[in-house]
Structure formats: C-alpha cells, structure tokens
Image (cartoon, rainbow over all chains, first blue to last red; front, top):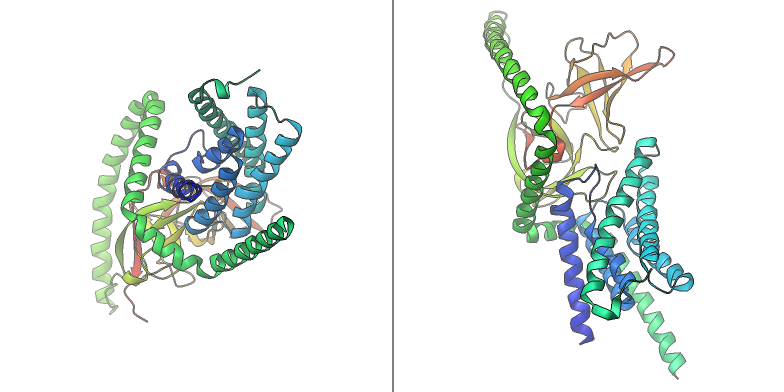
Length: 162
Length: 267
C-alpha cells in the first residue's frame, strides 16, 4: 500500500511538472506564471500529509531538474529546503490549521521561493520586486482556493477554523 | 537495536540521496533529451492549449483598443505594400549593378528549419523555450531562432532530438546587433527591465523608432535579421557608451512555431 501510494505521488509530481512547463508557462496571470507544483506541495503540507509532502518534494526536485534550466542546488533549495523549513516552523509555532495560518504559510513560502529566484537571477530592481509580490499574491491565492476545496471535500475532519 | 536500525536506515538514505544527486549532475542532458522526446506529443498539445487560453484572456482585455489598432494596421499594410514594391525595384537594380562590376550574386547562406515549441521555463526571471529539433537536424549552439521573420532567440544547448533556446528577453542573452539606418553596432541584452541595445558609440545619432537588426559579428548569426525598434535613450551624456531600449517586434509570449536559421556552409 505504501509503495503504491509513493508511486502515485511520483506520477502526480511528473504530471504537475509537465503541466507547469507546457501549459501554465504558456500564459501569464498579471505578468507571472502559476506554478501548480509548488502550490500542490504547499497544500500537502497544510493538509498534514507530511510523508507524502517529502516524497512529492523529492520527486519535484528530480523532475524539475530534467525539465527546467535551473541548477540542481537551486531546485533543491526552492522546492525542498524552503517548503520543509517553513513547514517545520509552522508545525512548531502554529500547529493548529486555520484560515489566517494557511494564508500566512502560503504567502511566506511563495515569497521566499520567488525572492530566492530573484536573487539567483540577479534581477534586483523595482520591477523584479513587483513580480515577486504579484507571484506571491497569485500563487498563494490559488493555493488557498485549492486548500479550501480540499478541506471542504474532507468533511468535518478538515473544517477551517477562524 | 532499534536505534542501530534507525541509524543504519538514515545513513543508507543519505548515501542514496548523494548517489542520486551525482547521477542527476552527470546525466542531466541525456535525461532531459530522452524525457522531452517521451513527452513531446503531450507537451506540444498542452503548450498550444496554454497559448489559446492566453489569447482568449488577452482578447477580452484588448477589445476596446482593437478597432483603433485595426485601423492603424490597415494603413500600415498599405504603406508597406508600396515600400515592398520599391524594395523589389531596388533589389533588382542592386543585382544588376553587382553583375556590372563583377560581383558574384549573393546567395542565401542559411535555410530555415521549422521547430515546434514543446516546453518553456516555468519560473520567472529565466526565458528559455525547448524546441523539438536537435543534433539530428544538424543544429548547433549559437544559431538564430526566428518567428515571423524576426529574431526571438538563440540556440543555447543542443541535444540529440531537442534544443534549448534562450530568448532575446532573457538576462542571459547577448546578441551582436546594430541600428539598421546608421549601422552603429552594439550588444542587445535582455532582462526584466526590457531589451536594451548597449555599447553604442557616443557619436552615433539614435532616432526613436529605428529598426534594430543582427549585425552578423561573431559568425554564428546572419546579418540583417530584424529584432525590434528603438525606444527611449537609457544613457546620459557622461556615459562612455550609449544605451537605448528596444521594443521587440515578435510577441514572445505567444510562440508556437519557430524556425532555426541553419547555416548552409558545412565548414
């Protein structure tokens, strides 16, 4: 059962990366692209499936290394270390999932993700910072919608608390 | 006993991760080429769908300006048809003159290889696309990539059946270019602030709206491929060189099919 679950996560990771490099990268929302792989990874963390979160993160690192031009070390940082570090901080200091916690977690992770990319690309300018903020708003907004949908589907088990 | 087992499992996981990382480093280009080949039909279809969605949303936003744009474009086409016939006359005259003074006729030194876009860089700040042609079509790094007659990028890495193209808007792009009218040469660089033609000498007179074309310096790219038009001057009189912003002619966000200018000289 565990092996089937792990294999399913790897397949999901593959299709998420394929979606990002083929579909979502073809159009922009307010000048930035939507990264489904990152958002789904963060939703896994919010829902509390930590083992699947780690498997998904490692699989995303593997597949992004193949399909993206980013260096391996950078992919490791943005798809594994940053989400894992912020997940750890969230579970330590804000263990109870609520709507504000979800918003803060999504926004901070997306912000850290995009800021890391901005620094590595050395595009430090007003326009670069604007893109970081827009990316954070778009991706964390969509992430929140997905998370809300997942929690609603989960029934009483996963009611969002204020 | 449990502690030993856990320690052993941790060491084993660490070793496996290190081996995986080394493998990733060593085999990235082979894996990338194989993977792009495997997903080509799906990624082409998804890319097309994404471009269609993008066009649909942008159409809603542009409805107000479309009529005025249509009117201006109709006038421009009429003017260009007149220019086109004048250019044909000048070409004919040029050929006759070259023959008169014993010049060999200028043969085209490249051919266009069509290529579909099968993927794009998904993250911001990097502008790369992946095309479905590679070494099997005798492509090599540095070749120009064209769409609708204008330069959109340059081959950066070429695999067996696919290639990575760095777009002209990328920070990593640097193309030898020149102003078409006064022939002043410079380097066209991309970035998040937009395209800029840099390293132009201070005594060059830059006019807004002048065409920018490739200069052919460096040998890899043909001369005269249209890139865009000049915008505002970005430099001050105290700078050693001038720098001018360039508006690309091609819409790089809606590319589906591109052409690689493959040199006909086998040397």
